[in-house]
Image 1 (cartoon, rainbow, N blue to C red):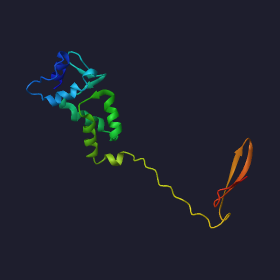
Image 2 (tube, rainbow, N blue to C red):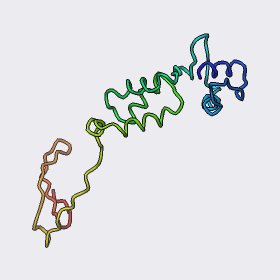
Image 3 (cartoon, rainbow, N blue to C red):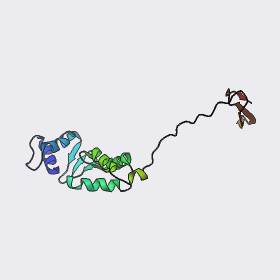
Image 4 (spheres, one colour):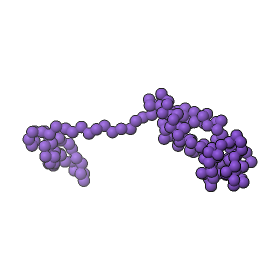
Amino acid sequence: MLQAAMSALKSGCWHKAPPDVSLSELSCFEQVKEQLKCTATVLLKSDRLVVPATLKELIVDIAHEGHLGIVETKALLREKVWLPCMEQMVETKIKACLPCPVATPIYTREPLQMSVLPDSPFDEVRVAFVHVDGQTLLLVVDDYSIFPFF
């Protein structure tokens, strides 16, 4: 596949594929052909190494070893390598991984807990010391009206 993409990049002919390569596979490379560069033995997309199909699974497995989650695993892979359909491959692998939900923190906010409104003013108050311009003031806030007194 990589050899077919390299020869298509050099010749500019993306619509003729060798018998063992499908045109749909080659079209993945054609979509990013402006970003592709090739040397004698290596194909690069920008500054990232294009991974051969035989190593795709291994590369994703190595990036996923720390159970970093979908976003961080993709970011790790994007730093060094490129492979067609990498995004879907990572998502499928991590969604099927049993240890990932345990290792990946979930950032959710707790719902606000509203306090019960007192029956009348000054039934409940909050008190705190506040430092303003070198002075210490006593702050009293009525929970019913939320009116501050200094």
